Length: 71
Length: 158
Image (cartoon, rainbow over all chains, first blue to last red; front, side, top):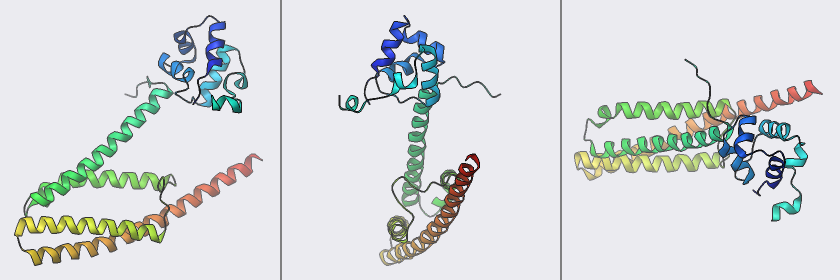
């Protein structure tokens, strides 16, 4: 799995730490970290919660272009 | 008291993986303990390991019923006569060897032990084949019922 930089960027734009985002969506900080590192594939329910908090769409945060997989 | 789940989804998945490994350690650990005690335990070994056998059978029975109920057979194997024959043969051979070793260890009679080994091998082979065929027929029925009910739900939504 590739790293999810988009979540990190959206989070930093809102001046949120991983802990803040974790609290907002009701998971642990290690789960947010694992998602950003590409080590954990979240459920659609959690994806939607993250999108809602960060004010982004699913496509904006979780859609991967084909060439992203090759990186 | 039913407490609130304090784990998030990733932790829950990790815990499930840990429990999964734990169950298989318990399963094969019990199996090994039963085999070792059967070989070394003497004539009254079966009575001494009745507890282990009960737990082992309960665990195996739970796994079987839960898998069939959910229409699951195996990750890699498909239920066919060929795989049933191969598994039954492996089970029969293993049981035959274990029984031969136990019998020879307990009584020290070679021909009697060989006969006991061959008899249990054949018996286990037939019994395993029958059990597998029966379980596979239950699985097929259940899997097909689940498939049909899911198709019906799709039709309802359209």
